[in-house]
Amino acid sequence: MGKFDGKQITGLVGDLVFKKSADGKTTIVQTKQKHVPQTEGSKKTASVMGNASSLSAAIRADLHGLTDAFYQGEMINRLTKSNQAILSHCFDKNTETYTFQQNSFENLAGFEFNIKSTLSTYFWVKPQLTLEGNILTLTIPAFEVPDQLKMPKEANAFEIVVRMGEYALHSSKRNTKKIHSESIAPEETHVPEQQISFQIAHGCLCVVGIAIKYFSLAQATKKPLNHKDMNPAAIVDAIYIPGEFVLPPTGSTPNRAIGSSWREMMKVNLPPAQIKIPD
Image 1 (spheres, one colour):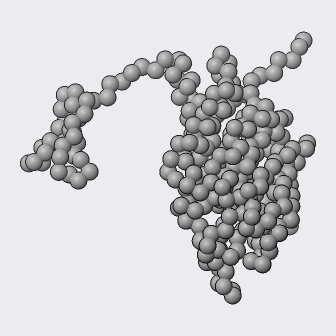
Image 2 (spheres, helix red, strand yellow):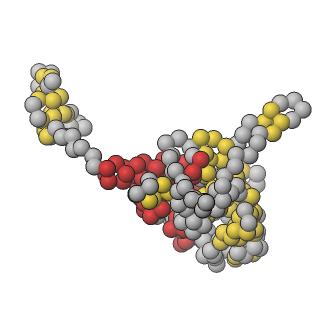
Image 3 (spheres, rainbow, N blue to C red):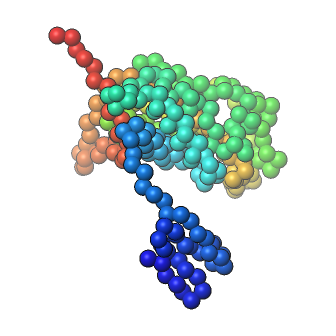
């Protein structure tokens, strides 16, 4: 029902919706949105999109240490669209199940969190992620400063920050963050190759990202310099480790129990294809 405040009508009147503009000076009139019944196909598409949105939210949360608040709002939509395309490709509409291969998420490699300051234009070497068994190794090649790492005018120190998210897709669980941070001394002009290894559970997607954090260092004072228009950070790669996920048992110490580092990944439902065993 519409309401009149003495100057303007607001609310629903017949098939029309009246509402105030942001400044409250004018009235906006729109047609009431009509309900359109969903087909089976549109329901399945909506399900894939919902899973992509929830998975993207988990990835953003686990890699938040790379971006902090220094990303563009449209990044959220870009990441969701990328994951929606991937999940759509891995989705069987007939059985409504998902099948993932080791390279299913490779299109996430090189995803930039801030297109105003892309990692690829600040960091002129290409980190690589390799898999051997269930051990992932991130290799950051040796590089020279400032030839292969762009240094802002006011910066005289930097850190290489690595974050990882681990997702048991079929079990809707995610592991706590694994973090690596390497501070480079101001006088260093040659940074040797670095290798960082992670042990990953079978049946999990691993997403690894890297960021460069700049500082102005004077005596014992370290001033962060990254901001909205300068925060080079990107996903290095995303690799799925085939196999069946088994939730690791919880541990304990003499004084207390240690809870599982795995948590529920809410609103993610990616049922696996059933493997038929011959009689």
